[in-house]
Amino acid sequence: MTKPHSRPRNVYIGLVVVTVISLAVACGAAHGLLTARVAATTATVLAFAKARFVVLDFMELRHAARVRSYFDAWLAVVCLGCAVLLLR
Amino acid sequence: MTRELTGTSRRALLACAWCGPLTVVVAFTGWLIAGVLPVPLGASSTAGEVVDFYSSGAHVPMGIALASIGISLVIPVIAAITYVMWLGEPGAPVLTSIQAVSGTATTVLLLVPMLLMASAGFRPERPAELTVLLNDTAWLLFITPVGPFVIQNVAIATAILSTSTTPLPRWLGFLNLWVGFTFTFDVIAYAFHDGPFAWHGLLIFWLALTSYAIWLVAMGLTIRHVIVARAAGRDPIPGVA
Amino acid sequence: MVGHLGRHGSIARSAEHVPAERGMWLFLLADMTVFALFFGAYLWEFGSARDEFTADAAALPVPVGFVNTLVLLTSSFLVVRAVEAHRSGAFDRARRFLGGTLAGAGTFTGLKLVEYALEIAAGHGLTTSTFFMYYFVITGVHLMHVAIGTTLLVAWQRALAPGKAPYGPRWAEGVAGYWHMVDLLWLIIFSLLYIGSYA
Image 1 (cartoon, rainbow over the protein chains, first blue to last red):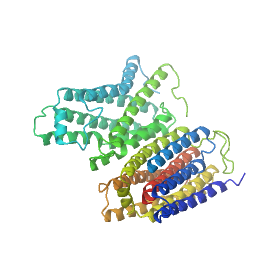
Image 2 (cartoon, chains in turn yellow, purple, blue; image 1 turned 30 degrees about the horizontal axis):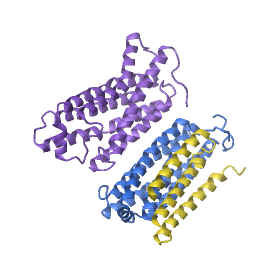
Image 3 (spheres, rainbow over the protein chains, first blue to last red; image 1 turned 120 degrees about the horizontal axis):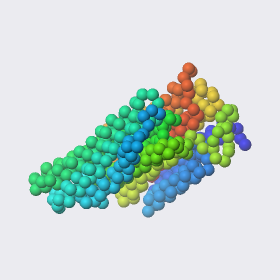
């Protein structure tokens, strides 16, 4: 196991990196590298992936089996709904 | 605790608790008779549609009058909440008082718009713009004065979540916080005639109607549970979830 | 449930450790579900007027939203550290971390108000277009959550001052959870309103 403090810190750094990547994806669309729909959907799926790390490592629900499953279900349903509405 | 329940006061309190679900049943019946439900007049309705609605017959004012009686049944619910909160609040009953006063104001603010709607149906042959004015006033007064109710929710939630002596379960405290939240943004109905944030919109009327109905049923049935458990000499608190 | 205290800041990794209490998390999920309805309504209308929405969204200052995302992520991370410090009884350290979080909350609110001022000055308002209706309502209700969260964080921090009785760790975990929800919702809002519509 790693040091107790290192995991939230690594997750935090990862979330910052993904935020920058999301913005780059949007710029990619602005420069015609991706279609607007694909770019928006990619950025949204990335946002929900980030949200899941907030749930698991910031809210510390990684080891709270039942509550975690509720959050996972919420994220999955809402993310899927958003993706469908964006791609339609 | 001092002042335990005698036979008559216990039965009266049980009746108060049942008034929670009963409010929903009577008010919904009245609105269905009047035609307010399933699809109410909207912020985008034309003057013609509004006048047509109110002049479609005596079932409109009578159904709304029935709904106003249903809404009056909130009064006993507030009284029962006040008693149960008072039982559990250590020291001076400050949160209990806030709840009682704000709950009373909420009831009045729900009752008055019903009477305005019924009045709109009383003489619908008047100039159309007057009926539109009455209808707008009634609906905006019905939907937007959310402050008192949110204060009541927060008072109940604080009493439940911050004390261990309350006989009410903790989930009910969180439910009150959520119900209060679903009402907070209803004031934006003043800005829109169309869409989900207009007074008849999904996120204003329908969300508030749903969460208020959930609140009445949950408060009523939980208080019933508390009274029955106390009468049987049981501790009504099942423990933190 | 018990036994996660006094372990030098680390959490007992038992199978069923629930921070705060289950009812609190269900409340947060219910709260987030109202936001999910907002998102659904927004995307529904977005799908039928893409060009109009994209043109309006281009008026949003994306760099401000981007900085605010980093600010909230940082403040959330500092709350994690504050909870760790609180659990291990290092109340002074917890108070300093919370000071950082509150600075983040203040920065976010300040930038948001600057953003609103810029948009209103440019002629955009609550009722000027469907996009800006959703923009102002969704970010406004989110800002209300920032304000509520800030109030809770201030209460937590003040109770950690020397000579005061600090709240229990479960209370701290509850406030922390609320603040993380504020962060989580903003991640989605930023993606949907700023990046998704801008693209």
